[in-house]
Structures are given as C-alpha cells and as structure tokens.
Image (cartoon, rainbow, N blue to C red; front, top):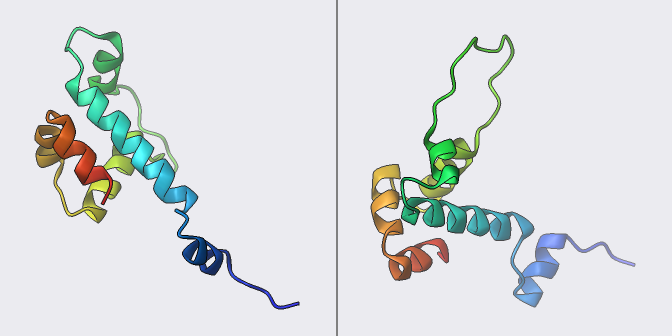
Length: 97
C-alpha cells in the first residue's frame, strides 16, 4: 500500500485545508468587529490596551498578530482592511481569496 500525502488527497478532492478554513473564519470575525458599534462591550475589549509588567519569556502571539499575518498573505494593510471591512460585499470577496 502506497502512502499518499494529505495535501495530495485535498488537491484531488478540491478540499480546503483546515488552516485556511480557520483563517477565513478569523477574518470574518475581524470584519464583524470592525462593523460593530463603538459602545458594544466586545469591541471595547478588543480595542483595549494591555497594561502591566512584560513577561520574561517570549511574548505570546495575540489574536491581532494572527490577523496581521493573514492580511499580509492577502497583501493588504491593517488600515486598508479596516476600511474594506465596512463594506460587507468587498470584505467577503477579500477573505475568499
């Protein structure tokens, strides 16, 4: 019995990788957050800044860091993404790239 890589199977089935499904979901949530009213608690927490001592070890990857990387893969900057997210149709097209 020959071994077949998962990637080969996904390509043959035209299936999407789990990472791309998760990334698209994260970007969808990013767009939703940007369209929220400023007085919503979720948006206030997202826009809040951390205060306190820095950790001694490597800083943890934050959700905003993950979103920034996803946007870079789509060749779009953070300000452009925030502006595009206000238009749901354009945002949907962007995250489906």
